Length: 146
Image (tube, rainbow, N blue to C red; front, side, top):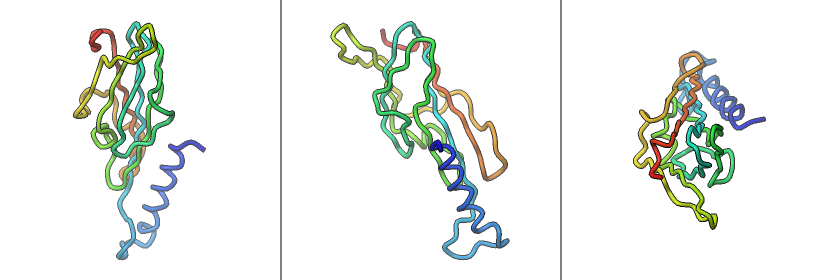
């Protein structure tokens, strides 16, 4: 089971526990939830290494994570009750680095503070209260300090 299914299942159960009664007893969560998946798409000519600090997101692989040119990789997922998460909810910062000849990473991009406008996508599925969003950070050579 993927983390996406686990988060969606948990949010559904929490929400239905209060919704089934028609009213919301004290101490019961009655708000819907949202889930987001964050992907980095490397449109540049170099391999990028992704670093980030979570503000709630669960990373899919240990960081830094390599993204070869022309490829995309899922960076993280996040789920919140009451709102659909956005990049500003899920991360404190995101960096992209390239490795020099000795393998030392040199930062070439930094997003801090987070800016959701730089991520494409948004809500793609779900009914009111159960949002599923996909966000993609597309980065090309022009975006990097190479």
